[in-house]
Length: 203
Image (tube, rainbow, N blue to C red):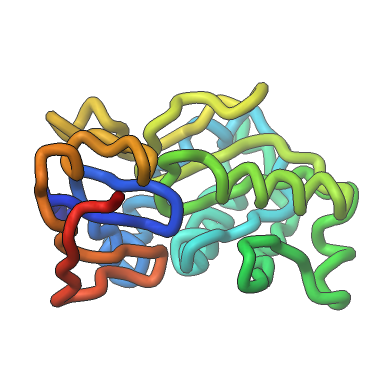
């Protein structure tokens, strides 16, 4: 994971570091290693029928399904099948599933995987979506997470804020970096980094 310090904004918050997880999501060999690590908490303990992929984690999700389906003593999902699906979103951040995908989620033991969890709002929207469609959420995994728990769910992660000294997240109207007069370096989203973005502090 490439970590870039600075002053960055998302649609909801300001953060002190940009976490570039694109290689983890798109490089096949790296994504396979990531999937092996993320599979460990579930291999012998958790029935998983569907993996829901957020923030372009489909490559990891496919390898994760492969890991969970491997043959071996005590592997919970051996001999089963796993669907790997992705919800669609609208312009206000709500999620839904196309009609052809609903049966792959409803009443299924579901693992949710995402790239990063900071404020938790996107994750909350994803969990609301899964609840609406009747999924049985049995786990949450992430490449990076700020909180270690959301509601009753522990979050299994590769990296946390403890791995990034000085990592901080602020509300857009309560940002220490803005108060110190530091201009924004970039606008970031799950799609990546908007290069060349410069603006004065938020007011």
